Image (tube, rainbow, N blue to C red; front, side, top):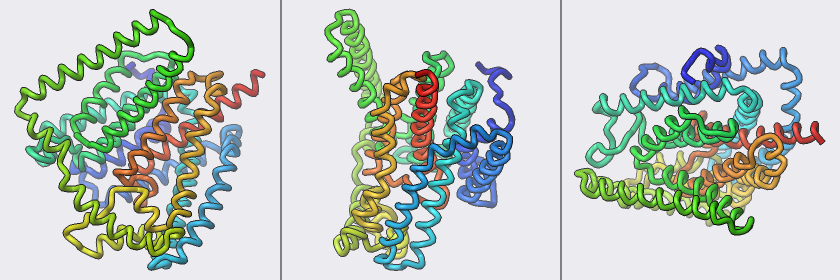
Length: 426
């Protein structure tokens, strides 16, 4: 696995390293005069340029972007709706260009990632390289956490921060974990190195003690496992299959019980309990939500703060009892663009999730329908997690936002790739 056979070429390697380089640029491991945002923009801008040059030579692949015509039509409608909502904002001059930029970047990022995914699905070297750099990235984060005192975070310095903060690194690690699982499904089997990457990512994820990201992780696998368990039940009784499922369940329960016993006798047990059940930050987030709700109730349909207006308001208010963010995507959206804007924004991820699950039988012709179910679970879990975080369409060029768009584009690419294969073989 770890050999030159996994080298996909300079350009694919550069593209697949994007998330990790962008993240590392935001840590104190790298002293860059530019902020993480500008580094990410520079990296992504060069990726766009590379893909445009590549598309000139590979016109058949470029034509496959026509599959996204429905997405572009949606973005035009979304632009019209949010533009109308902006007229009701506190500062339309502030909100409109930021809203325009967000929609433009959503369209560009989704297109670029979709183009990348078309190669990613068919090129095993690309997937092998992703796993290698993911593992190296995880090792770098672990070594940094163990050797750099400033990376200690939280009560007793227990939490892994990854050089930024635990919630940020947790979401990047969740991305590695889930994409590695998708890679295994694309290969129709788990390779030893993939298992190592997945387990390492899980250890790092648990080390962050990020409650929201851990909740997202558990929801993904609850949906994924529940789907196939229910399917087995309706498929009829099978003693061998039932026995195997019971053994697996007992193994998970045993490991969980053993881990609990070990932790309870550990000196870190009290710190872990404090972290998991601490509610101090919930009070400041609640204070931020109360301020934002005032503007929502003034105009429930179209909001009152305008695009990104909530962050500007909370930062300028400088209220000790209120956080700088509500850490809730849905509260932010209804306060900024109202119920109308909220529905319009969620329309895309909801439709993609329904599409990939509904068309799982077409996807099964090319790939395993496990990919369709896992992609559906990932999208649902991530957007459920947004009740406790705010990662979608945030900031000028946020790594977390790009990870969400990556999974949306992956689901689209899997469907259209499978649909083309299905049509050719009918």
